[in-house]
Structures are given as C-alpha cells and as structure tokens.
Amino acid sequence: MGEIKMPDLPEPELPTVTKIYQSYVDANKDWRRDHLGASLIGTECERSIFYSYRWCSPPKFPGRILRLFDTGNNQEERLLNDLRNIGCEVYDRNPETGKQIAYEEFGGHFAGSLDAVVRGFEETSEWNVVECKTINTKGFNQLKSKGVKIAKWEHYCQIQCYLSWSGLTRAFYLCVCKETDEIYGERIYYEQSIADKMIDKAYRVIFANEPSYMVSDSDKDMRCRFCQHQDLCRGRCLPEVNCRTCAFSDVIEDGKWSCARFKKDIPSLSQRNGCPAHVFIPKLVPLEQTDADNDRGWIMYGDIINGAGATASKDLWKVIQDGIK
Image (cartoon, rainbow, N blue to C red; front, top):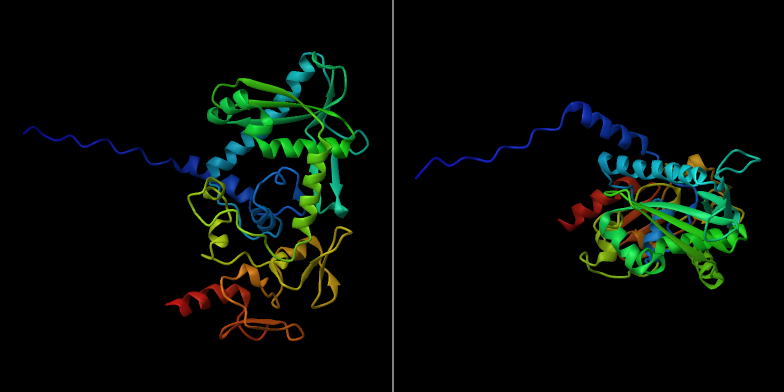
C-alpha cells in the first residue's frame, strides 16, 4: 500500500482579516432600533416582529456577513448614481433637512426611510418611489421568474407602505445580483389594501402586551430556521434584559414608552439597559406563571420569583437551568 497523503489544512485566517471582521461586529453593538421598520412588516411571523421590536434577541451575524450587508448598502448609492447617469432626476434626501426622506406612524413607533424618489424613467414620466436591494443568485433567479410580490413579499410590503406614506402611486424596484452584478428591475403599483393591512399589522404588533402565536413549532421550518429569535421562541433561553422586555413597560401612542411601576416616561437611551426592578413579560419566560404582585413588582413561576428582592432578571435563566438539573 502506498503512502496516504493527508489533505492540506486550510490556512488560518490572518489576524488583520479577523480584526476587520471584528470591527463590523463592534460597530453593530447597538443594534436596537427605536422604531419598527417597514422592512420587517412583511415578515409572516408576527411573533418574530414582536421580538425584534422589543429587542429580545441580539443579531448573531459574524463580521463577514455584516460586511456583506454593508456591501449591499453601497450598491444603493451606486444604483442611484446609475439612474442619474442615464438622465433621471433623483432625490435621495429631504431638501429641507438633508436627511433621508422618512415617514412614520403612531408617533414614530412604525417608520421607514425611502431610498429615493425618481422621475425620468423610459417606462413612465411620473415620480416613483425607488427601492434598491441586493440578493444572491438563487433569490435573483426567483425574482426574474416570479416577480417581487411572490419572490420577495417582504420587499413588496415595504414598498406598499412607502407608497401609502408618500402619496405616490408608482414604485421602481431595482435589485442587484451579488455574484453577477446583473440588475433586475420591476415596476410596482400602489395597492392600498396591502398597505392598510401592513399598517394595521404594525399597530397590532407594536401595542401588543405579549408575543403572538408561533407560525411553526419545528426548527426545520424555513420560516424559523434562520430566525434570530428561534431559541427564545422555543424556550431555550430568555430575552435580553431591557425596558422593552419588562412587564411594567407600556407603549404610548405619542411615540413614547412609559413605566407603569414608577409612573414615568422612559427615554430611548434608558430603555436599553432596563433597571434593577426589571421583571420579564411572563410570555417570554418558559415557565407557567403561578402568582404576581404588581405593587411589590414580582411575578412567580412555581417556587421561583422574578423581581426586586428576589431573583433578578439577569440571573433568572441560571436559576431555571439549576431547577431543571
């Protein structure tokens, strides 16, 4: 028998490359958005949207993927410059503020920013909302064969919200294939029934006191497989500790959050860390609630008490795991 040649091991990642990727992770540490974005509202699972709006689970993307997202953002500017280069009139900023053209509902709890409004297309002389995206080859081929409404429902719903807010009736969707740089374009028309449905959905999620039903209880379901909230949804962990996961926090329609325990508004920065009196929303805890005392600020699950003077929220998961053991 001849000598068996072992395969060459891959070269380890260079420290400089590792540092570059880590810089994207570090820059994404404050991943919390104050508002529910229109880009999320087409997601089928309302529970997932609730978790995102309540800052329940941090994103789990490595630096390389975050950098890939940034590449997608760069394509937006490139596409808009492409439109300028062919003679289109492009507005990607509010001329009064110099910022992106933005709209909001419910005092700012639900909001979105347009990539641009454009006119001068060959296909139409009217002003259009323009939405720019990037996608992999598989998704790009689905777009070409099925169109945005079928292949990328989330993008379609996002655009319908933008059309409703802007008062325009036309949109131009541009998507670049990441591997080939091919551009897909599609004209989209305003469907008020869909826009209204999405805005109603946003209201339902934002002002809900607890998460909605599961769309599936299987980790293999494609709707759940890549969800950042999967472990929380399945009861394998607890959510982040912040004011939005606290049972005493209330969403106020004027765009604010309020603490029912201490009777005061909660500024955005204060919401991020919560306070020592934090008590989890019971439906976010994988235990059956047995008692509660609003005045004293605690909730009981069997012989475990979550609240001030008992088990702090930051320690509750360890207590649960010790009890299971």
